[in-house]
Length: 251
Image (tube, rainbow, N blue to C red; front, side, top):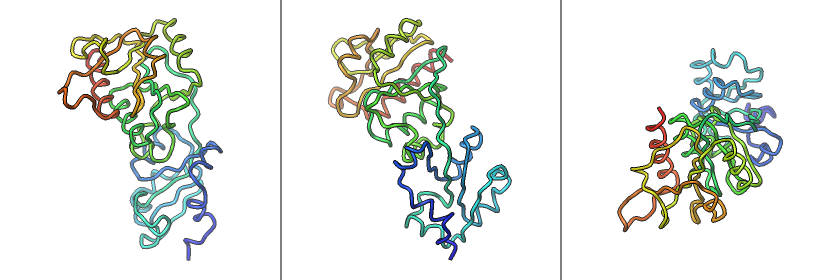
């Protein structure tokens, strides 16, 4: 039975956290893997169903280790078909340098991989490809975040900082405006706000919002005007609206 081949069982023998600590990631789905290939992510091993291999084998030509399973067996690996019949183990892209002539999306304490993945997808869609995360945020390279981003995370520059306040102050000294998104009394209306190209766009945690120390150093605090009975959007939904507004002013 091919499923017991050690080269194949390795796809389920590792925990995602173990892979991450070894600077490896497990990615799933043909669209995600196609974007990884187009971004020159180093794919070490690929496992696919026989039918998908026949359909896409030309795009796998540069991958040294490609393993195939009959379609009837591949779902046995996890008991569910989330992977869409194809998985890969890759080197995790390590990018610590942001393009400091472009907007930067800042994640302050976002812990949900679903929200982070959705936010990354919106950011890539609006050409905001610099992502700065603090130590409390879910890393965009965890498996679930990658999947929800539909692989668009591979187009992004990602930097992690252990002191967000210091990093933002440094960016301010380089001409960035620090803009926090919060429904606060002193907030300005998004409808009337004009974004500069060099903006740090800060999104706060799902439950607590942006940290007070970050709000205090912000150049602007912006809110989405909405029905008072609703008060707040989901973090990913709100971010998509803010990113569109930024894109609309700078495209």
